[in-house]
Every structure is written in C-alpha cells, then in structure tokens.
Image (cartoon, rainbow, N blue to C red; front, side, top):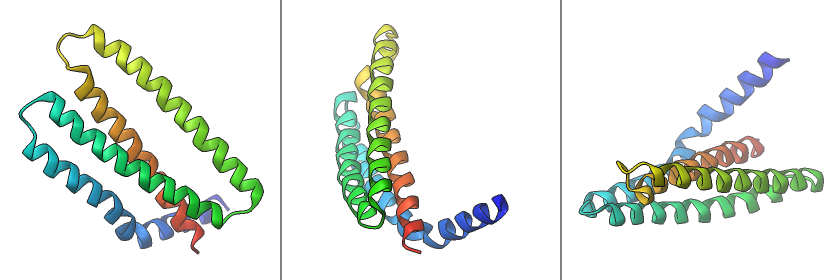
Length: 137
C-alpha cells in the first residue's frame, strides 16, 4: 500500500511538475532580473526578495482558495489549521533568525533574512502546488 501511494504521488508530481514549475520559475525569473539590476546595495537586493515574497503570497492565497473548493469541510478546516501553524512557525523562525543575525556583524540582517523568508515562501508554494495538482485527479 505504501509503495502504491509513493508511486501515485511521483506519477502526479512528474506529470504536473512542468506547470507547477512555471509558476515558481516566473517568480524566480522576475526576482533574478530585479537582483541583476539592483545589486548596488543590500537594501535594494532585499527589496527584490520582498517583491518575490509578495508574489508568492498572492499565489499561495489563490491556491488555498482553489484547494478549498476541491475538498470537504473537514479537510478545509485541517488545511486552514495547517496554514496557520505554518505561518506561526515561519514567524517564530523569522524572530530567531533576526536575533541571530543582529549578533553577527558579518551579515546585513535584512538581506540574509529576506533571502531565507523568500525561500520559505517558495517552498510553501511548491507544497501547495503539489497538493493542488494531486487533487485535480
């Protein structure tokens, strides 16, 4: 049974990965263009990361709505609770990250933390894209 679930997941993932990757690739491409044109300071580079985070937030919000349309009430509650727990975790992680980076004079906290925050959002977006793709079948 476990093997069947894994094989099914891999089948769905690899059949839908190109469309999922397009969403993330577009955000990443826009971020790279911004970084390539705004590399003059840590602040402007961090701003590029925050713009990408905002784009991820928009996509995540849309995906959550789409997913909720395809699941029953009980799973909607679970998804909502899961999203809240994820946001709580990321917020706590950001607090810890800020505290650690402020003590390290070798890094500009806002640039490093913006990169980590972006990677966290991108990862959550990937998770939700996989979930949504699996529900479409």
